[in-house]
Image 1 (spheres, rainbow, N blue to C red):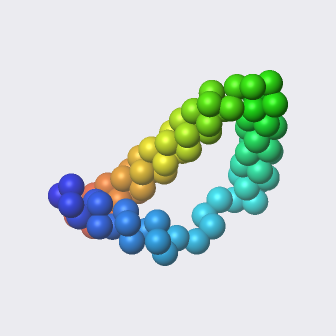
Image 2 (cartoon, rainbow, N blue to C red):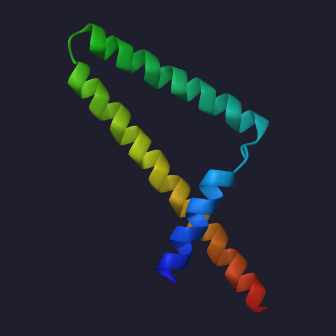
Length: 83
């Protein structure tokens, strides 16, 4: 089943549309700005490498969260199809 998950995940990420609610998009925008300002401040203070590590870590965590949500949705769909 694992290869099927990967194929479906690739398809979903390539063909997805904005699925966030308006209020969630607004919160996402606020949080992205907060992170961007913090990274700029760290970079200005000479901590550019640490700032990039923070950005990379946040990006990876976001991607893992998205994968988890996708897998949960796919599992729910598979379970519902069995009913």
